[in-house]
Image (tube, rainbow, N blue to C red; front, side, top):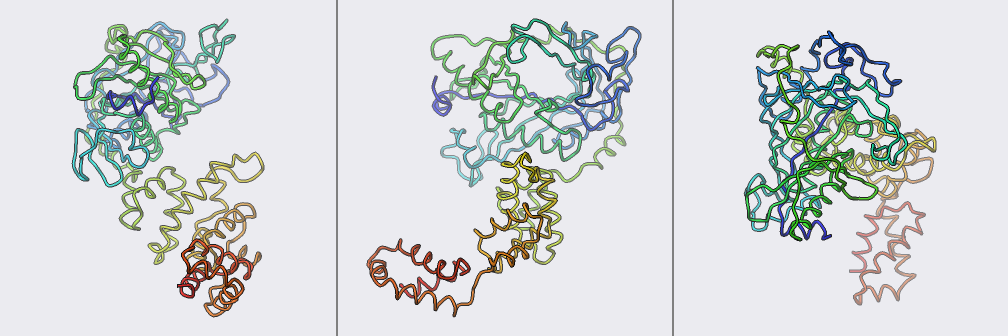
Length: 531
């Protein structure tokens, strides 16, 4: 099988996503008063409504309607004032009533969009932008200095209820194939679930990954879901088809399930693109089917032939009246919109001169953005001067620590643990020590680690360890003269063209000053005297 970059030279992928998010911040289910609680004992949060017992009538959850409208407003959707629910019929044990209550072709949220900033290595998968100048557009993308911006349409965001959870026992990897028996937990049945459906505007696995990451940031910012992919509250299905480059027709698509991480989403789509290309190039046929992504085997497996809308026998839900949302209701929800991640990133770039890369990574997590905002508020008049080094501290050191420490050794874990010790005041003190040349950037990493380990102030750590740099030019010049006088042969070699010896001289000076000399001043004096 050919590699993705080779396949994309001949074939264009057409990708659309269906992203499901449980409204986990609500207290009760969509159509009944049962409690929402992940990890509760099986079948302890059920009632006649979510079990579909005869005569039980659904009552809509107003807070859930507010949440989906909030999601629509945050993703530039039109809010439909008139919509209704339907019954989606299917025979499977995860819904005791044998149908799912969902919305039809007209949903609460229609015709939205998100713009994706694609740069760095992620932009490398898009190979059809040769000859497109910065600021010029081709299709749904606009070229930037570092990559491009992709405009991705959102068909709709509709509301539905989640199904129960099936547990298959006796088979391999918890799948129904080969299982000896299955168990069902209806605690999740009836959980408010919103599904966002994109237009087929995505062209690379990286764009799909970035879209889902951005949507997750938005949902977290507006507070409608915990978006835990590990616990299943954020799930994604990917639809992908291929067509020869230069053509406009659509090929037969397959749907990928089990994309429960950003990496699985990327890798599953990449494999399926390569698989379809191989089938088509060998004269085979792509069938419309649902496939399972197996991350351990790194391949997709056929699950079933894809159902069509007719298979579900959709008809209007007779127990729920159509919805008529008022302008007052919609504007009331709009007033609850917080500053969204991309808006916050734009503010960081404008107010503090941060690069798009730094600003985007600061808002990647709510905790890092909140920490940065608090630090900038405390910095006051020094905010502009310290913003860049503070951003580097948060993005590189703090995030790097979180990614490599899980708390198993008793050390702090997660952003909450790190920021409980690296407070905004301590972070400003640390970057300030570097800015005033009291310590080097290399020493700052040692101080950061000590702050987290010892829960101590940076200045106290520097003094206790004797780390404060000597920046006095006179004192450093005396050491430089001694080092040059002690190594006349290397001085001659340097002046003869071996300029790489500058590192040797700096090292000798730092050794003589027991690591406390200011490397910047040492370099400047050496270049003057050796020049």
